[in-house]
Image (cartoon, rainbow, N blue to C red; front, top):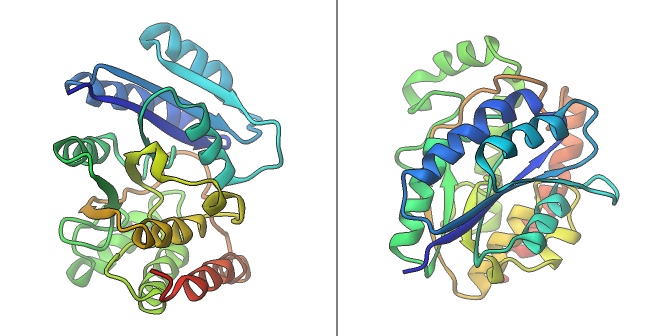
Length: 261
């Protein structure tokens, strides 16, 4: 079997995290029988030294490509442009802030290449999954709060995200448990442009999952422990108003897709 993979990292001012994440991803790929791979850093207007960092890493490892977007800032379109530019049949993408560890990516890769008819989603809310460095939030919620307090993440944002996802799952009406994941691997032909271009932020993932279900694609959720951000600031929201504003498109997406599959 000819195993190939393009890994997409959408970025905005993540140079410090890229310095550690990219070598870790390369180690994970190198330990597996993957004949051809590339890492695409699709940048949405960083003002840090992301470009220079990626160029230096490419000198060491090769196959590291920095893509500077020219269009309006957009997380979903950053991902889709990475899909369009990828040279391989299979693609994966994940956040570049270190919250989705390279070891977890390796687990998704293993499950995918054991059955390439699957789309595999990294999930915080199935067996083996957890949030902000804690595996079982039912018994370790306060440990999660402590972990977040010691990081650049927001405690309120963590709590809001957990319960908001549960609400979306109920509204959406499927068996998928992490509708805000953004951590996935599959054949690139399965990921169609309309699901990305009609979205402004992470709600694209709701449309994407609905589209996959509608087309009878087999989806498997694999638990992973979402870690706290090491460097930089969260792009999600910094206060209640921003969280609510950011959440409304997710609710619309879940409602609009309900029953469509």
